[in-house]
Amino acid sequence: MNKIDNIANFLNKKSKKCLAINGSWGIGKTYLWKQVEKKLSEDSKDKEDKKVVYIDLFGKESYKQILEEIVFKLYGTYNSITEKTSDIISGLIKKVSCEFIKIEPNAIFSFLKKEDFNNIIVCFDNIERRSDNLSLKEILGLVNLLKEEKECNVVIIFHKEELNRMINKDTEENNKQSWYEIYKEKIIDYEFVINDNSKVANSIISNKIECDEKVQNIIFECYQRFCSNNLRLLLKFIEYVNYFNKECFNQYHSDKFFYIVLNIYYRDLLKYTKQHYYIPINDHDKNIDIPIFQEYFNNYYVLSHEKMSILKNNFENSLKNYDRMYFLDYHNKYLYGNLNDIDFAKYIEDLFPKFKNYIYENGTYYSITYYQGFFKLYKKITSKELDCKKNIEKNFIKELVEYEFNISILHDPFHENFYKEIKDMIEKNEEYKNYYQELQSEKRKNINIDSFFNSLTSNKIIQTFNYNVIWQYNCFEIESIVKSFQINNDFCHQFFIFFSSTMDVQMLQKYELKNNLFQAYSDFLDLKENKIKKEEILKIIKEQNHDCILLKLITS
Image 1 (cartoon, rainbow, N blue to C red):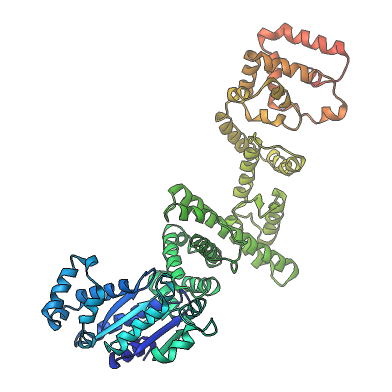
Image 2: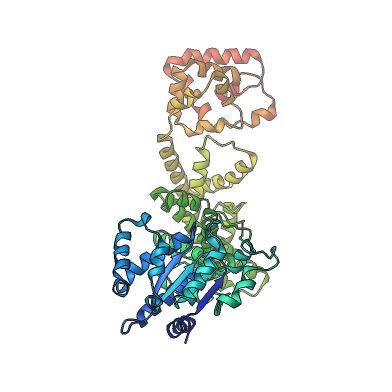
């Protein structure tokens, strides 16, 4: 027989016995008892057998409270009690049901005979969580009373170490002996200690989560590493796992790295679960951090559609990160190990389409030349172009356009050199030129130059002419900039002052006349209405006899 059957059999066949179930908090003491209780109930279907009165001592303030609960549970679950007691006690019980506070439970309890407890098991749980107002000596005295005078079986459930922290508050031993050492021999007949609940945890996981064996093993591993045998924590964790499996994780089950990434997300979900319930996480890997789980706990255990979309995207991207790491490992094996040409070409073909971000990954920039090297190698091995080559190159063009039209970032030399390689690729391919121009045109439709100028003071307009930020004007259609020169006198004046000033040769070289700002000013001067104006401006600049952008622009 298993331990549940053994305990049920012990309580069924014996009388006047006290069974102690001892184990750390959350290890499954109450869970075990409920299984035993279920077994006792099943055994009593065909015959009159033991009935259970379960008393949770959590927060109980007094001996009186416990007696009240025992009486009411007996009256409610053991209907024959009224038949076995006198008319007086029957009347008392009926009166108690509507005037509970006015009846002394001691009086009612004293009327109950030992015959009334023949088939009763009284279980006291959470002894260590009782109120400080209720002494341990009172509880143990009641246990002894039920056992010896009422001759029923009693079960007590507790965590011995926690009780020992309250050593002998009720004794005169000056904390030299624990309550257990003092009372075990007198009160407890059999002790069942739970040290390991692995089988129970496995059973809970398999029964409460619809997933394959590998996923169950991941959850069990998380439990063993980070739950400290706490089944309550496991049950809460399973509830949250079921939610995220349904809403997010299971959608990517076909990916070969699914189990690796799922383990990372489960561990982080467990970390936030422990934080939510104020359970220490010193044993947890604190390098893992997915803050969106915190929003789940803050929002009554639900994620908004928007946040769930973000989580799905992050999970998918995490899977793709592993594709890149997997490829890099095989690249090294190809260069330094025994991986042959054909097999490596297959890895290129299989993994390149799955990368999360072709340009940036885990703190590293990947240039277009990095991929082009593999494109050439693949063609050299297979004598054909890689199917995803064009898609990857177009992804780089998209990234270039995003970069060019992002006026919130400062373009630095590193990025300029990085994106120059993409521009060089575009220049060599007519299809890519057209694609690039289409993307730029679409972007410009969504950018309003009037809003841009409305957000700038005169001083800030001048700042937009600096060589390191002038690229922002490429975000606007040339025609819209021409219009601004026509209607915005401050802008037109600031432009003339800045670019008619003398610049040294090195500074002049930093400006690219293909910039939309210069092209727009040139078109502005070429308007029929500005024919003479252009001549006068050129005359003034030449009279100053120095090098400047305007002179270079007008005479080019």
